[in-house]
Image (tube, rainbow, N blue to C red; front, side, top):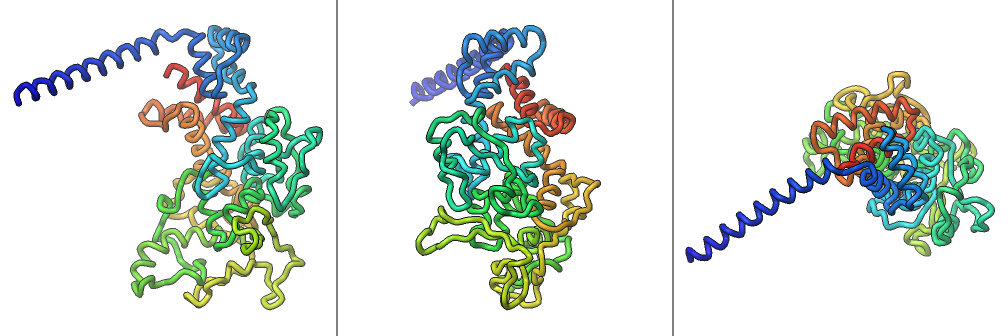
Length: 411
C-alpha cells in the first residue's frame, strides 16, 4: 500500500516538473519568436491557412520595420479571411441554434461585404444594404423566397472577396428604403427570428449577437410595465410576485422596443414547408391594412390577447427605449439620438450607436483571433483601446482584426 502511495507521489511530482518545464519552454519560445514566426502566427489567426512564401516575406518585412498592423492587413488579402474566418464568425448570428454549420446567406454575405469594403460596420443594423454574387458568375438570381443564389455562390467555390457586389436592399427585396435595417431585414434573419412567435426573438437575438447581452443580463424590474403586451400573464401560476420580480424585468424594456417590428413577418406554408425554406419576409405598408382593425400591425402582436386584456395593445411601430433610464444606462446609449423612433431602421441605429455595440464587436473579434475571450487586466485594457480605435477608424472592423492579431501574435 505504501508503495502505491509512493508511486502516486512520484507521478504527481513528475507531472508537476513536466508542466513547469513546458511553461518555461513555452515562455522562452514566446520570448524568442522572431518576426517571421510572428508573421506566420498573424496569418494563421486571421486567414486560418498558411501564407505563401512571398506573403510571409512581405509580412516579415513589415514587422521588422515596426509596422505590425500593415502585416495583419496583408494577411486579410487572403480569400480565406472572407470565405472562412468571416463566414464562421457571422454564421452563428443567423440562426437560433447559433450554429456555424449553415449555408451562406444574405445576412452572412452582407456582414462579409461590409468588412471587406471597410464600411462603417454600424450600418449592419440599419443600412439599406445587401451583398450578392456578381452577375458574371451566372448564379441563380437573388430571390426573396429561397436561398439558392447564396448556396450556388458558396458551392461554386467562388471567392467572396472578389465576387460580392454591394446593392441596395430595397431594390432587391421590394421593401421601402425606410423599412430596411441591414441584416435585421435580411431574408435569413427574417426566417430565423420573424418566423411565427411574437417578433421578440428578433429583439433578443439582435441584442445577443450585436450587443453581447442576453435578456437575463439586462433585466430591470424598476421600469414601468405600461407597454407590456396582453399576451404576458400578470400572475403566472396565480402568483403576481413572479411577474413583478421576474417577467417585468425583461418585458418592460423589451416590449416597447420590439414594437419597432410590428409591421414585419415571415410568411411560409407550414403544411408543405415546415422549415420555412421557401418563405419570405413581408412588411405591411400603408396599403396593407387589416380589414377588421384597419391596422398595419401584424396579427402576431395580438395573439393570446385574453391572457391579460388590460395589457398594451400595439397600435403602430413606434418604439421607445426605456433602458435609457435605470440599470441599462450602462450600455452607453448615444446622447445625440432621441431614444425613440419609428420602425426597425431607427431601432437598429439606436443599438448600433451604443457603446455596447462597439465593445461587443471588439470582444467577438478578439476571441475569434486570439482563440480565447479577454481574461486578464492586460486583455481588458487592450479591448478598451481597441474600442477607441474602432471608433476613431470609422468603425472599420478590419482595424479590430488587425489589432487583435498583433496583440496575440506572440501566443
